[in-house]
Image (cartoon, rainbow over all chains, first blue to last red; front, top):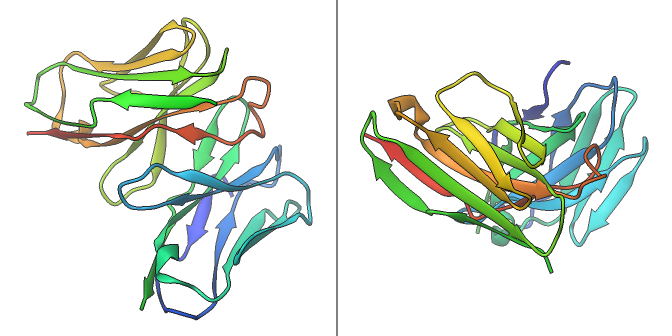
Length: 110
Length: 115
C-alpha cells in the first residue's frame, strides 16, 4: 500500500447502532497513525495518536486499534449518536509530513 | 495555550487574480507548519510544509507558493488563480521534535471559490 486508504467512503447508520471503519497505511517506515474527527463547519480535531503495534485507545464510545505489521487500523463507534455525524480521517505521518486518507463520512440517522 | 488562526475565512476571486492566505500560530515556538487543501469530493491534500523560517517543501507542482517570513507565520500565495484552485484550505501546526508522531492542530479553514 503506497497511500493511506479508508473504507467505506460514506456510511449511514441508525442511532444506537455500532459501526466501524478501516484505515490502511504503508507498514514500512511506520511512525504513527492518527485519527481525526472533522465536523461540518469546524476544523479537524485529533481523536487518537497511535504508535505501537497492538495499541488500543478509547475515548468515550469511540475506540481504535492498530496493527502496524499488516498496516491497518480500525475505528469503532459504539451506540452511534447524531452528534457522531462527521468525517473521520486517518493520517500517517512520514518524515516531516503527514498524509491523510480520503475519510469516512458518517451520518447517524435519529 | 496554543492557538492557530487563518484568514480570510471565505473569498471569491476571479480567474487570473492573486491570492494570499495567512496563518499565524500563538503560544508555541518553532512549530512545524502545513498547508492542506480539500478539493470538492476529495481528501486532504498536503500542499506545503515548513520546519523553519524560510524552509518550504512543496508536495505537488501547482499554481501556488508558500512562504514563512516569521517563525509562526505561514502564507499561501498565487500570482494568478486558476479555476482548479477552488477548494477549502487548511493551515495546521505540530510540535517541533514530534514531526513523525505528533498530532496536527488545524486552523478554521479558508474557502476559496475561483470564478
